[in-house]
Length: 112
Length: 116
Image (cartoon, rainbow over all chains, first blue to last red; front, side, top):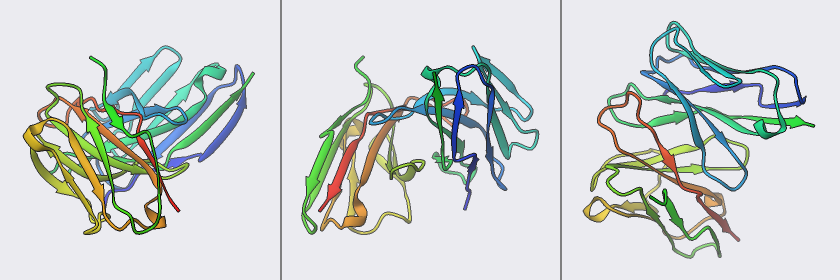
C-alpha cells in the first residue's frame, strides 16, 4: 500500500516568516501534486511535479520533487494570512490504476 | 463552465437510513473520482470511473457503498444502512486525461454527511 506522510501536521506562524512542509513516502510515485483546501471546500490544485529533482515556483511557493520520486517539499517565503489553509500532497499511484493517494495534510495558520 | 457540482452540500441522517449523493462533473471530463475525508485528514480514495466504467473500488468501501456513472456523465454515490462511522465529507473530482502525467483534478465542494 502506498502511503504519504506529511510533516508537520500543524503549523502556526507569524506573517512574513518562511516555512517548509514535507511529504514523504517509501513508495515511488509517477508524479506528485500539491493542493490547498479551505474549510468547507474541496482541494484546489496548486502544482504538479513529474520529474525527479524537479523544482517549480508559484509566486512565493516553491515545490520540489525528490530525486527518487518518493518525497516532495513545499516552501513558502514570507507567508501571508491568505496562505492559511490545509496543504495536501497527492501522489499518482504506480499500481496500474489511475488514482491519487493523498497525504495526511498540513494545517497552516498564518497570523497577521 | 460552472465547475464540479455536488448535491446536497449537507446531509443529516439517522443510523440505518440510506443516503444518495450526486456529482455533476465538468462537462466532457472523462474521469470521475469519489473520495472521503474526515476532519483534519487527507482525502481517502473510494472509487474511480473512466467514462461510464467503474475501474477501481477501494477495499475501504464496504458492500453498503455503491457508485454509478450512467452514460459517463453525472455520478451517484449511495450508502445503505448508514453507520456513525460513515460521517465524513464526500468529495467528487473530475478530470480530462489519458494517463496520469499532468492530470488536473477539479474537486467539488463536497457533501458533508452526519449520521446520528
